[in-house]
Length: 183
Image 1: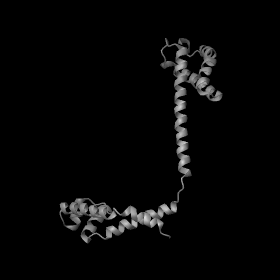
Image 2: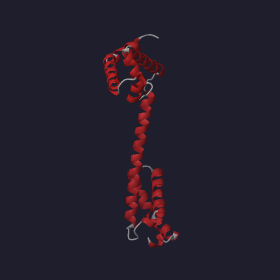
Image 3: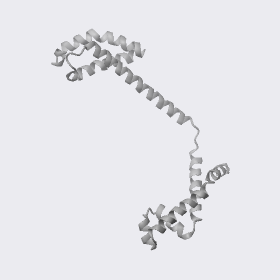
Image 4: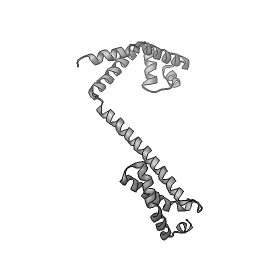
């Protein structure tokens, strides 16, 4: 280890020759794929060379290589599982029937119904609600524009929301009915 730490390539080559086959067999037992095992073991030795300054010189080299190999295998298995889950999820998403034109039409219908209900609010309440939700004015700004109190603005907005919630409770039924209509 001291020789490798000092940059002695021959010492590293000796460790490589001594442990390559043993570590490869260890990786093959777990991975069952020769090419993947070879790549992984190669990566273990590259990591040893790169991180040699961080390794205690009294470290058991065989133990270090076995543990490094096991950890890389576990990371690879975890990565492959995530990749498999992602591909499965993507395949399910792609295979789900979608009709974007119908979805867009339903969204337009929803917006139309909501806008219609807003228009059915009492005039002053509708004006306050639209200044808040469409013009994004604060309660204070609305109060200043309409020359009313902040409390009145807050009360009118709360009332508008309550009324819209009550009226739009039947919205799921309306959406189902509208999607059944021919266009």
